[in-house]
Amino acid sequence: MTGYYVKNPGSSLDVTIDWAQQFLHPGETIAADLGWTVRPDMGATGGLAVETNDSTATTTTARLAAGQAGDAYLVASTIRTDQAREIRRSLTVRVANV
Image (cartoon, rainbow, N blue to C red; front, side, top):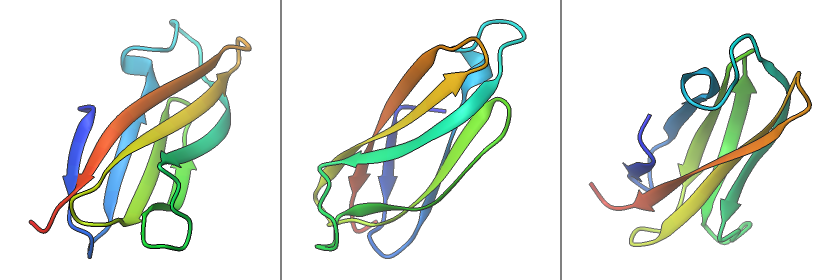
């Protein structure tokens, strides 16, 4: 997983964070997926949106849709682990007519 993505405004983009690769301690798992956020949050005005999200014991995935060409968004996933740690990981999505 990289921290920078480019997507077309007319297509969706699936992004996955594998927390076990860098962030979870050995044997630690995701106890709660606290969701994904998008900044700036443009609501129904055509900004980037989390269409769906899913998680496993060690990954979180979001399907991102829409967005305005030329804009960049900060997308973050937050989890709580079975060791009561809360962790957030952010990535950048630039929307372009590619």
